[in-house]
Length: 221
Image (cartoon, rainbow, N blue to C red):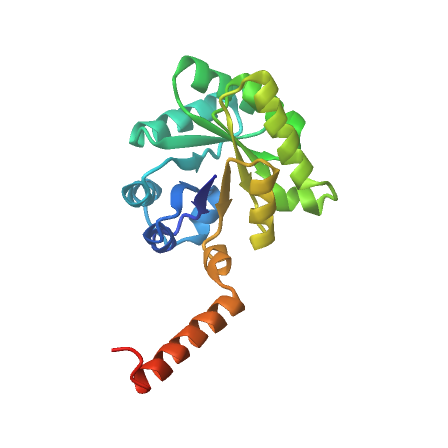
């Protein structure tokens, strides 16, 4: 079980990394556009300096040649850069070329079912990203999709790791892990929510009060 931060905001990434629970980062063009302005390579390199594990960077082109050019650029930045390729026929060709011929790690993204994940893994993908929130929006069982993909990995002896993405809440994170996701990538806002529980706060306050009473009575020094 691993948690990645889904962000291109360096301040969010730093905050998440400081907790000691984040082992990687995923970004996409939408996240990059919504973060603070600046050179994208510089931002990715800043993230790499903060996060110890892989950082996924997504291509924008939709043609085979265009994606390969972008992928080569991103992969040249750092060995820990994982190139995100959207699921498509062209994307599968790119995955095959990058993983099998160029030794570039790929995260196949925007997937909504286990058939797509199976195709990505057959092409050689190192990571397969299932969009939990969007799968649920379509009326399908995201947990079952993750579980099916996990079975495909076992039966096909694939190397790929499942990334559960498109989190809509803390419950999605819990269910994704239980369903068999190796990694959940989450916006920063859900990390504090995973820690918070009103009864925990109440219990801490009770312990503090009991300690203060004991000190006043001289039972403790």
